[in-house]
Length: 496
Image (cartoon, rainbow, N blue to C red; front, side, top):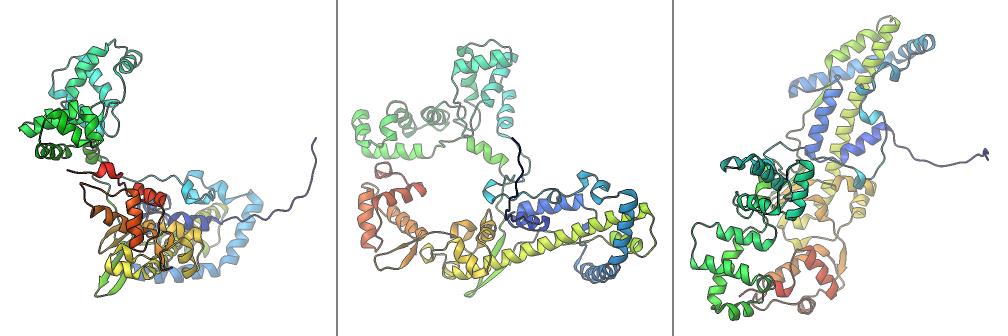
């Protein structure tokens, strides 16, 4: 049954301009450059500034022209009302939807975590193309060529073939209408496994390492011994049961040490070597640059590749011409179009300026908060810092600071670092002082690095050792930090 009722709700909605600012704020410098180019293509009233002198002259002239046009706003409004009343003219009806920037059509108030972003990259040689190009170096029949392409297409990012021969046989039958037995596929696979880089198309880590050892041209006794260890004692080797290998293989500890050193030179993920070819263009471009001038920190925004924007002079002249003359209906429609494009361009320029100002103020607060670290580069000097701390300093919302820290990098004298990595929770040491969890991880990493590799420290021993240094940490916390640092357990850290 349908019924009517009154309901009062309090809803907060962002204006299109606010949505634009929020979107630009969370964009890293590389994505921002692409966004600006897209806006220039969509809005003819927006253009890049030719040079600094023209920029200064155009800015002064633009302001005076726009001010004079704004003074005639009442006249324009009256004309617009007459046109609307006579012809039911609406601005949104006049423009094609494709000409309206996306942020003016909808407001998607989603959190940064829900935003899907694509990193613009330069096209390069793909994983599969690099391997398929090597097929031509071998004498394959048409059937074997299709089998080889199918095998290459089923390799994962690490370069491993994770599918069984019968499954590949079924794929060839259903997708390529080719009947190939598992034996025929295996024959082609053996040839593909000789492709560059060595170890490609292996079905497991053991086979991957064996392929690399067998393809070595400068074979020595150590190389042969390493192959024997991988082939017959791989389980003992992976668990670092070196005593069993020495006993079963009847070899000396020195021979085992040399063989292990040879194995450690191998690449357990040969596919990464191919993927690096197509990832050569993926550089980290910092959004901020911090320089140390004899103990004085200087912060600057990286705007080297970001073009300076200004309003198109032709559109300003057009607006002035239409605004100072008596207009017919068609001219009023053109005036509405020109004015909307100029307003959109001016709003985009203002949004860029607001983004730059917010980024600088927020990063400056972070730099001052972590001044000791940026002066020394010592992780132990990092202070505990959360989003709320910076939001309180700069008088901004926590979500705004989160957008600033999202996907941004800062170039320091000690390397280019992810901005989000400076935010960490705090813990209390034995003296009651607040310390950063990143400082604890640094102490833990240094302690493990300095341990006796022939008798590595267990998690319980690490707990006792860190307590003597003033860090009262539970064993499960040590294990959690060790996993976050990609440090294996004591047994797997053992060396001869």
